[in-house]
Length: 517
Image (cartoon, rainbow, N blue to C red; front, side):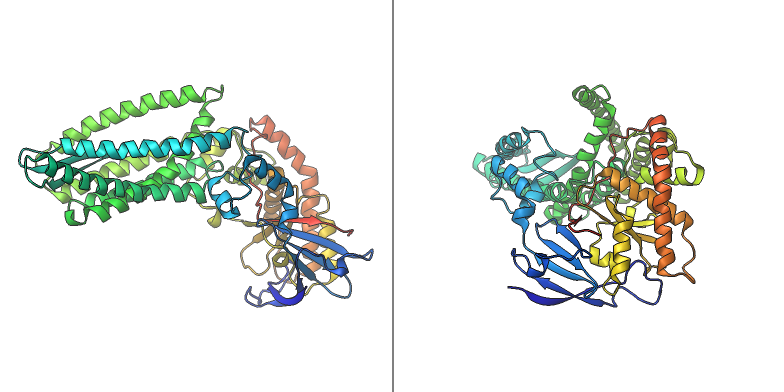
């Protein structure tokens, strides 16, 4: 059973008026139904164009264009059809019963096709292994605390977590009594393990929610990890001023540093993989441990010498200023170390630099020059020209447009795996990109090339018609048809690994053409 809905959409990207905003809506009729197709889709006239917009949750929307109705959408709950192959693979792995939201949280994107066949079996066995390991850690912590009782009956706890030492006083119940010591130690262990447990939530959140970020830009996230870790250390410093609030302050510090570790570890593994050009990742990781342990021992020795400075420990302002100086030096050295990395793979930042150089100067930069020009700290949101990937079709084409212009857009990108339009609702240059079913990283790279050509050649917004917009889009595609092959050849000649293009296609929305244009 179907029923009409009124959906709204912003103006078409071809729209030349600057007075309209996204809040002003155009209405078009949408029919929502179950998995049964609407009768009007069974018999299609020759001039009818059918598009299918697939969503990551398994649903899809069919768009019908004809001369009578400008845009009709039929929302279908056909997730079982769209994901039949993936579901069969998951059934073989025994995970078809998991909710989609949980699958996305605990498994890599594209699972099981994106990992080796032994990945799931290893992780399933690794999970209880880690559980038993942390149980042992909790029990050992309690034993260590019992052994730290001082002669005065005060339990002094020296713990080391993530290169930070804590000293906690706990009064034992009944000095000299093993029972009192055990009770105090158990209480201290519970408090300490609780603090670690709260901190572990940060790593859980980062790994589950942002696991797909690190392959694209490990340098950026490794740097951000140090910024966040620095903020966590501030909570640790304040425990000296507010010892009564040790548990909440230490927990916040541990949570913040756990988030930092969640960013640091996967980022550095990508960097290690970059170093292992001979397939010797294990040896590279082992030698990195040698460097790290050597630096740790030397740093601890120097830290002890600094703590022995008269008056430093007793003066909190002096201790804080010393820590701040060391931390700023640490961040500067981290930035310098990341700046010397020379990746030969292409991510979005480097793609922007390379494409801009090719369009303006008809050449591409080498790996050294491009990596030096790459801004480690910049966010994609603030990079210009702005590109929005994975835009819904209704946002790209709007509602009140003639069928002829919509068909022109489809014909324009008939040979491409993407649609790209310029958003006229923004005063700054901005493009909206949506990808077809079967799009790859190369499709994303082509859309970025087209964006930069348009950005450099886009005419003034004044006195323009939608036809001129269409002409410039058509011209950009002609230029890309002629020059993109030269761009790829120059990348190979400059030493770039064109087989490793880290430009991910948004999987939440994809468009499929089902009918003739």
